[in-house]
Length: 321
Image (cartoon, rainbow, N blue to C red):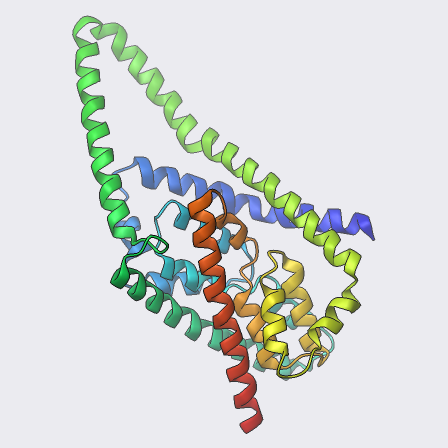
């Protein structure tokens, strides 16, 4: 029913909102607090793709959204982002776990096998993407180190200007300035770490809600049976078709992929191809501005081809076993 689409969209957006709020608080802390150098290094260090993959396998798209926002602010590398996106499966594993169609042993085997492949591919793709980005240093996958170095110089210059301005103001208004500075500092921290993140999170949540409604009604209008029939293309076309469906930034795509696999409508590798390309709502967060849109399209294309390659490879291996 049409009202179920609205309820599902509201539910998915409500689940995502705490992640958005937390993510914007983290971004503000990274941008304005010089005492968070260790967390910043953890986001860009040698283990970053491993951490990204570990977060991505959690069955919700909140981490992919957080990763996309952090990437847009250049606090994680493109490899870490790709690791999170590839590992993300949205609600697919929960669907497989709760479906009454598959026997318990088949559920466990399928989920563990999918997890293993997605972890291996996510980690490998993450490190390879960072290697390529650092090797060629192109404008599409710009290395984070250069941007952070530039941002660090900007922050230092602003800090020096701020100290100089405060020194001049204290010369004529010492007592009054003491009270005003304390009051302003208190207000600025509330504004910086609560009000601003809250407003940003609400703006993104409103956009996510609209997208959820749009794709929800799209799937509802097309009919689940028609989508399933579309997925049930020829065995050797399935990975390509499922990878395309996986690109849809909505939890419905992962649910349909998992349900169709559970009833035997698509091959294991084909389902895996769609789940590799599925990054939930994270891919939407990448878009915004001409340069960001170009980056997002490149990342989506890379993820799509990885999903197709994984799907065909796994289906081929299954024939040999």
